[in-house]
Image (cartoon, rainbow, N blue to C red; front, side):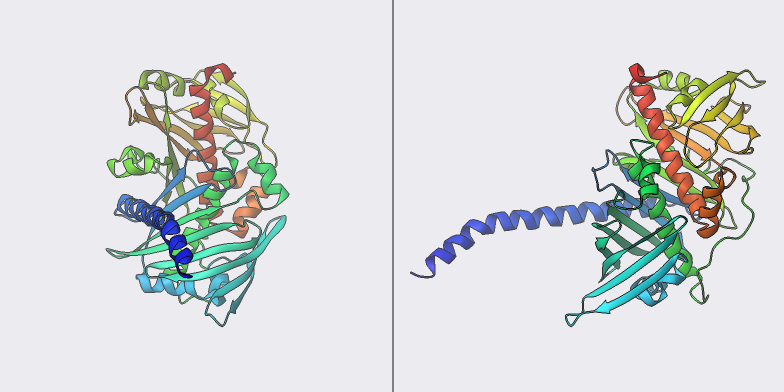
Length: 408
């Protein structure tokens, strides 16, 4: 008789617990399918990385998932991730990574990351998974949050995927100020950080014998052709990822410098309307911080002179239209001379909608002292910041076209 209340409690609680377990299992299964889709979408040549930025972003906890090809076996990647003693050989700016192992075997790492003008620090829990590693941010900057690295074999090496969700606003005043310039500032900043972490681990696995982290040192310059390759963002393999939000492609040169980025967003307007708008430089008012746009005629179509109102960087430039039917421009004047901006336009998933991919090579290293210092301290920020900028610009253009009442 005394056992009956406990049995009743178990009977009442069991359905809820079972339902919760079912939801967890379903979420894990969905995450595994997304990782598989990311890996499947990686081009065969291994020099284009795939990123999906969930939209709409969860307030205070944006989510970014990305994948890259690694010219190293899965064991080399896992070895780089499970030993905090070697984390400075992954991220050069990491000035502290002190591991503590509890009697239960649980591992925590106290970390500090040096960033130009400020440092970030905190504590994370490290857990080894059958096919990767999970890092849970427990306290300090960026907490709460989670990084999950997944590793899969691939011809010629491995595929490494990263799923990260964290409170990017829980950081420095400077980062918060920069993120506040755009409604998508937080997921944009997270995309930059996630990309740097992903490629840093990949490069460590590929250069495991080096005493320090390997980084590209070749001169930064536009590639001979527009990258990623034309129509890459419309690939059928990206369809399940486009359903989650914005999809980014980051192309790298043979020297591992940035070749260009593309970010595709869905626009709830028909193709003819979107095409007409994107061919007109006056649409650039949709880009965050593009304060003045003065159209000017050119041999192959209208270009424009622009003035920006962005803090700590300088994007003022003169843009000239390139030959051909696609909306594409090159910066021919100003500090970012040689930068590229263009669009790929294709049918959206639903009738009457459009998917537009912004192609960008921004030449961030020319835009001011902060950008130069940041890229000098972490060369992978050349790629990560370009990805973040393209995402913010593409998202701004989406809003600009979908909400004409707010347009200038």
